[in-house]
Image (cartoon, rainbow over all chains, first blue to last red):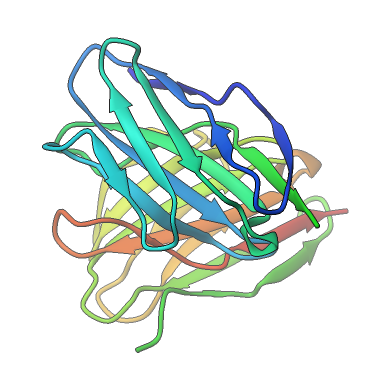
Amino acid sequence: AQSVTQLDSQVPVFEEAPVELRCNYSSSVSVYLFWYVQYPNQGLQLLLKYLSGSTLVESINGFEAEFNKSQTSFHLRKPSVHISDTAEYFCAVSPGGSYIPTFGRGTSLIVHP
Amino acid sequence: NAGVMQNPRHLVRRRGQEARLRCSPMKGHSHVYWYRQLPEEGLKFMVYLQKENIIDESGMPKERFSAEFPKEGPSILRIQQVVRGDSAAYFCATSGVGNEQFFGPGTRLTVL
C-alpha cells in the first residue's frame, strides 16, 4: 500500500517570492507521482506528473517538481508565485502501471500581495 | 469540448433520504472513478467503473453506497439512507485507456 505525507497544511507567502510545497511518500513498489491543484469550488486539475525518465518535471505555468527516490520525496517548487496561484495543492502517488492515486491531505498555498 | 460534468453541484438531503450523484464523462472516456473529499482531508478513492462493469470497489463503504455506469447515460453514485457523516464533496474523474484522470467540479452533499 502507498501513503502520502504533505508536511504543511498551509503555506503563506508574498507575491513574487519562491515557494516549496513538500511531499513525501512511502511505497514498496515503483510509483507514479502527481501534483494536482484545486481552485475554490472546482475539481482537481493535474499540474504535473512523474512516470519515468527525467526526475525533474515542469508544468506550463512555472511549477516544477523533482522526484528523489532516495528521500522518497516529490517536492513542488516555483521561483516566483502570483496571486492567482492561491489554491489547494495535492500530492498523489500510484503504483507503477496504475492510475488510481492515493492523495495527500493537501497544502493550502496562500499568496499575499 | 465539454469536460467532465457532474450534477447537481450542491445537494441537500435530510437524514434517511437518498442521494443520487451523476457524472458524465468527457467525450471518448470510458473509465470513471469516484472519490470522496472530507473537510481538511485529501481525496479518498471509492470505486472504479467501466461501462456496465465495476472494476474496483475497494474504497466503497459496505452498506448504503452503490455505483453504476450503464451502457447509456451518466455514471451514478447512490447513497441510501444518508447520515450526517456522508456530508462531503464527491468528485468523479474520467479517463481513456490507461491515461490520466480528468476531474469534474464535484457535488457537495450536505446532510441535515
